Amino acid sequence: MGFDVIDGELWDEETGEYAGPASGWIRGDETPEDLALLVMRKRMDIEANILAEKAKMDAIVENFRKLIGKHQARLEWLEHQYNAQLQDYAMSQLPRKADGTLKAKTWTCPFGTVGFRTIAPKVAVEAEDVALEWARKNCPSAIKLKESILVSQLPEPIKSAMLEHPADALKAGFVVHPEAQAVTIKTV
View 1 (cartoon, rainbow, N blue to C red):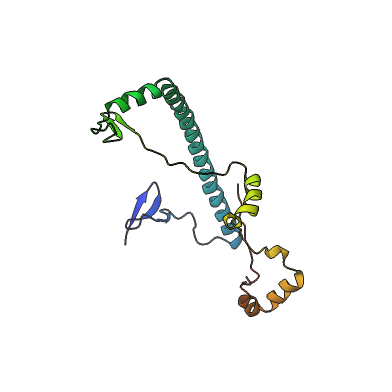
View 2: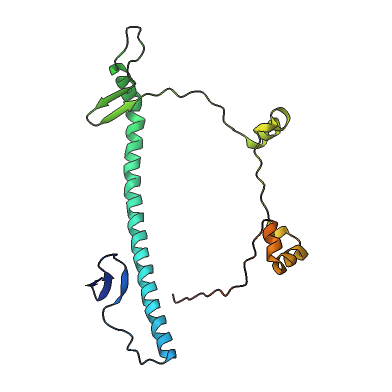
């Protein structure tokens, strides 16, 4: 297993994973305090670089959004001006059977296709509260109910009992996560 050195950084040549700096920025004789400060400074530099690159990416994405918006406006205008005409022409070009029904439903040209599909009628909910009221009286099986447990609503004595007896909590379908230490490291 070897490493490639790229811009003063080591990268695993097989996996492509980062393997640390090529030159030692830690000498090895630092005091614990100096090492902690050195690591925090390095961390701050890396996090600042990440934020800077994200800001660049966001700016580029926003610029592309604007460009795409201009193209979208052109497309919407073109569709508004010519879609009806295009659909009529495409329909007139489709091959037909002897009885006049369509043999195919897609017209093709070098620049794309115009396809016609029959969409079956369907029922959709327009006003959910009105539909729910109607369904309760006429078709209760059409109403979907979703139940869930709100742990925050369990009485404190029950939660305390579960914390004291995790095995009993597990039998009841709960799991007790032991106390843990959370660490947050911030630089920028």
